[in-house]
Image (cartoon, rainbow, N blue to C red; front, side):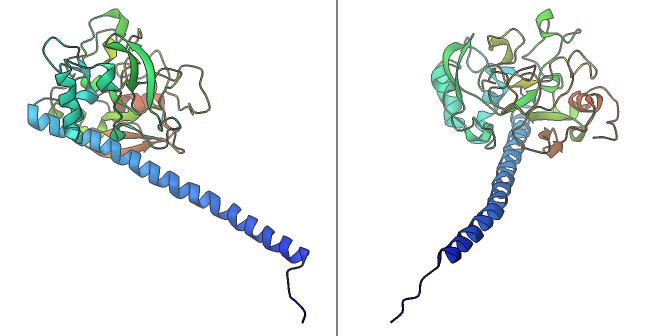
Length: 294
């Protein structure tokens, strides 16, 4: 009896077909994975903004960039203030029991504050020296708008003094003069941008870095001056690790940065937006309509 088998040519053809199919399938899988990650990131931003709404309902005021946790202890960041409203009451109570923020409680990772697309979100903890303690701190992929959640000084330069981190510029949601649907509350910022991680629990004034970028904050300077000292820039920090990227919103996604507006909606802002339009959206009290590129 003759045994049938594959010839070498037939085997090579089958291998080639399989390789082609894998080559076609892989980009599709990557697109599905990125779409899922983008959806999770969008949901995180929405949950954070809804937490602000719930905080305001419970306290009759907006949270501040720097908020007391216990009397006499170091203040926590706005993310600490929002912990009970993103189903992290136990962590908030642990911070209270510890007498305020510290690296021990601050090392606990909260997935709601992390973008799954960020190349460093797997660990999301960094060794950082801050005025609230040096050690391993959990960081965040999202930053809060200082133009809403703190009160800038007349020069909009943090180091000039007089910047009040403990008092929101807008006391309540209804106090946002430009409207909640026209004002950015939170944006993405990749972990460890320019080697400066946004420490989740540490407010800007305790970040241990002169300009406050070690806290989960953006829009210092620019929120006051849309055409101010620094320029709006989209960066790919997972590729570009030098240059002034720590102060700007940034993303690991393709196609644009996701921003949470103060009404709870999520908007993807692409690189075609002008500097002026973006920072008008960050300023809650300028009274100027957003540009056509918004």
